[in-house]
Image (cartoon, rainbow, N blue to C red):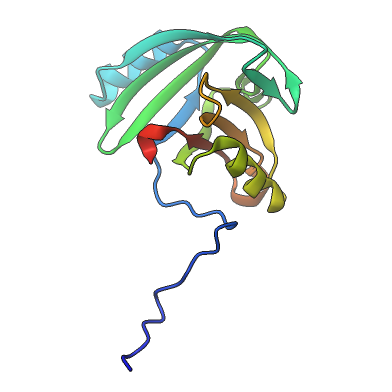
Length: 165
């Protein structure tokens, strides 16, 4: 019989296991202006800017259906993506954060397993509920901003997408 390695552990299937950070998101008033400032002052970029609308059928805040439009800017910084986000129209947790705190770090994005609903249930069993949920056309995929501010000092965004599997 060999020596047991105490570092090796079996993670129960119902336990949350985060292994990677893929992006950090900053809420801003003006995506283009902020992206330009970051590029000019810090050499980060180029930023890819896009606008996306989400219908009520795909989005909710604290369980209530909502529709909204966001503007994003993304740039790679090493292995991490820096994400800037601006609410263009509608009610979002980004706008709530902006009104309460001003511009700043909003969340850290972490990949999680599929299917999305099973992952949400797993977090729920740990007492962590979603603040905002977005579903993709594929029912197995989606992302959610989890209410982790009081636990770890920031929001975690779970990303259940095939590309992370």
